[in-house]
Image 1 (spheres, one colour):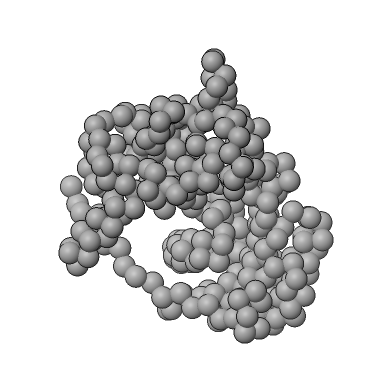
Image 2: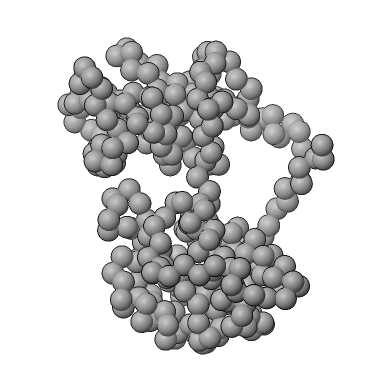
Length: 310
């Protein structure tokens, strides 16, 4: 069996066009000809005034999904000249909060290239299943024929785009953590790179979680307290949305909820607060299963191990 390819660092450059973090941003990767322009609704006019937007390229409109309080929505498009197309698309859609334009510094993208990239982006977004697509048509990349060399170049282009989009706040291409049956097996002890975490609380509520792809995933079958009447819970709205989506369902006895399926939280504190129905420091509340080690201590231990390996 061959060894997995070695990960390597990348240098991402963020240029603040207006000199402020909330203004127009141009992102690029060192050695990549691609250029990603990022605007909000308030800076959209300045985006349209940029000369890069007159080039052949892609665009993405991204924001909360009006049909799903827990989800995000995206529209992906392409054009010979992005300016007019993105302006019309933005006017037709009220959900978006962020507008992205993808072009190249050397104007090397052709109509054939961006049609292929659009189709592949739509395919990759559907596969990742993180956001809802607002596209009425979903073109197949197989119908976007390119010479073999051009196709290879566009796949390399997409690989860089997949790196840069999460940095500017778009997770649409990031696959959801894969939860297998083996993951769900509760063990007393797990290897450091496969650690499972549990909540220990006097109420005897039982919850199990793992860390996967930078997210804290509470596993299906975990429990959450119901109606504790604590005054402070910053994640009360999130909990209500999870209940509304059928992710948290009442148990037969009715005094607790149960996770109907695994759910990825942005932090262990968000997960702990939903489970215990109160503001919770998840870094100290979660423990490695079968150990006194808190999540925070486990992270420190993992960091020290990584440092010693370099």
